[in-house]
Image (tube, rainbow, N blue to C red; front, side, top):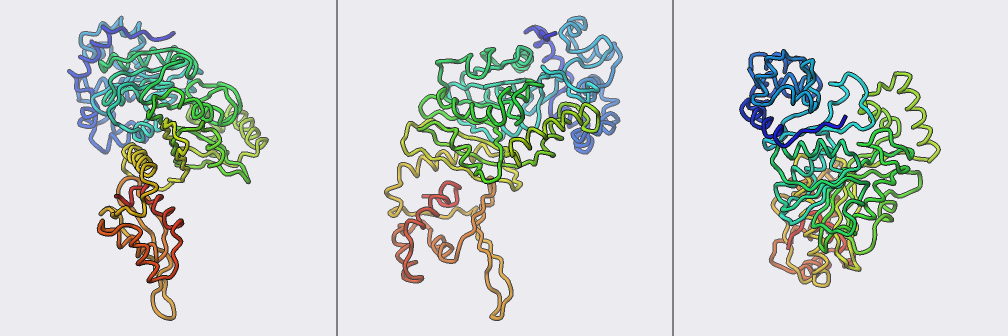
Length: 483
């Protein structure tokens, strides 16, 4: 049964949640940081103890976050003006006093409506399961550029997380999904949060054929495997990394000129094949593209992770059968690993569009969204100023430092590594040689680059100008040199 949370029911739920303090801050305030962190690790007992005397808020926490059965009187009191029979009919709660849906606070006093995960269900999820707020959706939200735009498409909205974030900087939002169940739960999410979103049902870009948007975000079913659909939230029905390839290939056609698309994607790694060349081959012409690889998973880890994600024990008979079939598929395709990361695309129409593929596998704290915006700006600046780089006065930002590692030798300490390190954003690092370090030391906004190169040539002999310009372009893209 597809849940139907009416506008009136959602308005009453919202009122009940606000009255009880069932918000992100309210939950942390009752649980405390330690019990809240334990709950995030899948250890519910500290949270259960912390909220046992918390009244209506405690009831909602136990009901929706812990999966406990609550007395009917307590549920009625916590839901306020919501008629309990209406809540049961809409699958908000069950007749047994348990949560029927996952309704949880999220970020800026938002709530997200999704299906119960495998832990709260007590078993594997069904094929039409609608995923809640997971690591992938949070990561994409953190990696998305947040500049004011007129129109945005949330392709494959699921429970509506990306559209929620978009509501902070977009005038008009369109959300699509192939799953009618996902759209029903997304509609409930938007009603709870009083956000107006156009919802369209259909496969991939079909529901918005002929339209263009200022921005497109997409958390697609990017799991790499055989061409089948076991779970609509993760499986595309396309072989291998076909879903990621198809979206990268088609998305620019739905962008307005200068529009930006951002998505999570996966790509296979095969022996003797450059992953960067593989993803570049997906792109249409006239598109700036930034592929950021965050991780590479070996097939065994990959299969085990996604089996557990669906609530299947890899040690069970079902889990062993599925794992073997999946691993056989990897072996037959010569696939040694699966890359995962973020893709940022901009429709430029330019013949000299910029395409950059790079690894970013170290840990960092800052969200990647501002960096994506900065990267787009820097790429556009380089395109406009490419012929005048030598006449440009560059400056090294204060957030960039030079790290040196030296080894003891016969004549004392000798540098073996010089590393330029940006201390903010994603913490970019570039290993450089001594002449480049000297060049950057002179980048204080006083002299043009050509004069600094002339001084460098005087000190070190002939300088390869083209190589120096390549280094400068790389550093500008990473915000380690500014004009």
